[in-house]
View 1 (tube, rainbow, N blue to C red):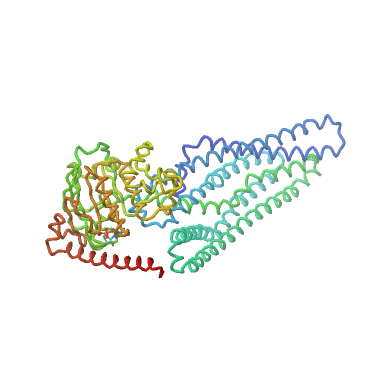
View 2: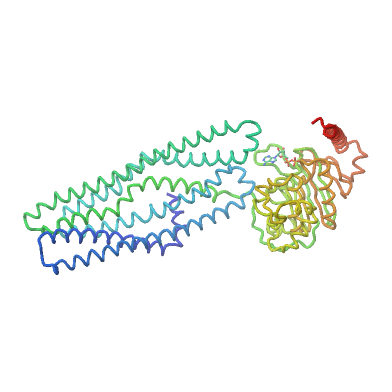
Length: 594
Ligand code: ADP
């Protein structure tokens, strides 16, 4: 019931068109009743061969009601659907606005398909609330009122019959169908969401599934989810068919019962014979108002399930409280962290454990350490994706949570490991960080990120589509595009998270050189687990298991027998082996043996 009132509150701004749609629906049914009644009267009266002039009012009536019905029906559909789709658009925007602050901390708890399903099909389902749940009962009540008054002028029994029939078709039948259809409808929504989740998973992981020969198994999973969805679709389809059949049966039963009540009135001359058929057809056509109610219970269940899933998103509390209104940029760009501690919700040990560092404006700091040391978590804190528990992170002397997120993001440009490239042109992907940038500025940023060779290689240069998540580019090229995006943003502080991860040594060196050149004069925080090309950094902080274990310049760290030196030796050995392997492969190619 709470969901019902919340949906009602959402509809409140559209009350005027909704009221209009209600009146138009009423007019449609009045037109239908009038049309059928005058047509039946006309046929009955014509059977007695009266002069044509005596039939003229009835002929005019048929024309009038025929036109009225058609026009009112058209306008009712136009107004109610227009108002409904506007409302759905508003709900979609509300849900999307609620999603944004939840990313990524809370949204990590949802599966991707689940979110698709909620934002797309659950919102679509809400149209039932307005079109099939809200309007029909109001219209049915008003029609019943009108018909009861009309029938009372002929017979009180007829009025009672109408009340009983409307109650059976509008309350008892929908209630029974609701009771039996409740679970199937709920299962239908659940299985639809499950199918979307499985398909979204399948599409996202298609490459891995193919390379591990798992595609068939995943197909079976999708087929099973599809079979379940189809099963519940058929079951609920059957209930909808029962609803229609039951409604029609009640309508015909009511007409027959009305005839049983009215025919005796002909003998006592309380009713004129030519009116009998008109009355019977008027009663039959008034059922148009109550027939849509037979599926009320089924649609109600569907709409309420969809609403509760959507409200779960709207009610989710962001982990970050964005109540700071200060949109002013910092007075200076000195970044510092002091005893920062942070743990993920499901983590027993802190991912960041008492980290402190200073990064003066224009300096370069590298955060290095083995995988799982907490480097990316620290970047997430700077991006305000998560909230740190204790300690402080300050920018320009002020706690970062004191800045409005937009101001903070203007000050710090962050390139995360898994940043996304959209299925759009290269230029559009770079321009994402500053949509107002001119083409010259985009090109300049691309040049600084050493993308010149890539652009000349692509068929349409900057206008080439890069594919979903840059699937048309190599790993190194993707990184360059992401860095070009950050360069275009021109934020005073640049944070790069693993810009060379997964690249071969040559590409790695090229990217590092490009980073040094492109970030001249800027503050740079570089997160990496590769320890090559770090000579240009002013300070290197070595992290392990959430803590700082060493710090200093590259030369100082290499002079110590610490983690940095150990990791560096290991990496050198690894690189040497790789170099030997690639040289021997190269030689084999040369000799034509491969
Ligand atoms: P690094 O970037 O140094 O490889 P991370 O910051 O990614 O390390 O991870 C630090 C620790 O936090 C690891 O133990 C990792 O398992 C954990 N962790 C990272 N992301 C999440 C997450 N979203 N939820 C829970 N734990 C996480």
